[in-house]
Length: 451
Image (tube, one colour):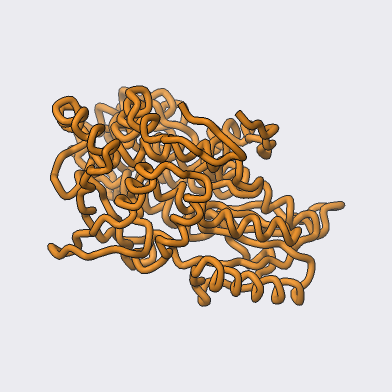
């Protein structure tokens, strides 16, 4: 049992961490998230048997403060800009105990987090952050201090002692603090060499998002104290003011706060003062609304690189050389469409989606035509689709290329939208209209209670 006095934990919470209920929930979350094996090579699917055999011993070691955290496996993964990012992969067993620790710490710190922090928190999401950004801009706060923090997940950033001091203000359990320190300072294996860590929070740990919020909550409180309008989603944050002069003053002041108080550097190349039409956040951009009575107002659109990325993925899934049946292809495309549109449903994108959908349908027709291969099979399939025999014979022996055929009446009148939908195809425009009707309202903070 945990007692509270002025919101400070004053008795051991380690028993709560190692409780059967907490560990079962942590195991299920790690299992559902899947993820790669750590340094010991144990996959998530093998974790259950390991925990059954050794779980009791691990719990006793954690409670006695003798648990040995395994080193982290460092893996370089490519980024969309051509650079790489270091991902730290703890062992599957360590991920379970990190998740269990996260579940104990989250409720303690959640009540202290600020209203305009939206990343990796219960009942908070990116859409609410975007809605708040749009509201700030349309309320006249159109000089934006856009600060790009050098990711706190990097191993050369975030002083551990600063983070641990912030956590110790609320967590007085010695065993819990020791376990957390062990996870933070676990060495990382990069290219076969173990490296010590005294800075940074490894990306890939279940604890990383919470630790990021705990540290950056100090920034949130400073901004609240100064009365600024701001939006923060994890380490993406922006401040909204009414003049360029104010933006410069606020930007310089916050830079000094981050440098001196939190010892966090910013990326000067990517940071700056923006106007709405030059500002991008969480994959979205802002453009003016050209409508009577809406002067000075803006709406959300999808930034150019995200369109290109989406089209590239659709192009790959509709390559004629992919060894997949038409139904498998459609299933993969539908999954991509639903995920992309559900994220970008706040944007005004119907016109662009309509154009993209025409291209996608032609790509699918091209796949079908290529799959028919021989002229005789093409003729028989065209007849089944309602084409008169003589016309079907002529079309099946056309000298046009496959892409030209896909855009011609040969397939546009036979592989119709209705027939594609009968095979399970999800319309981009139709799904966007449906998804955009369901938009969550801005989150209202509940009344704070002390148990």
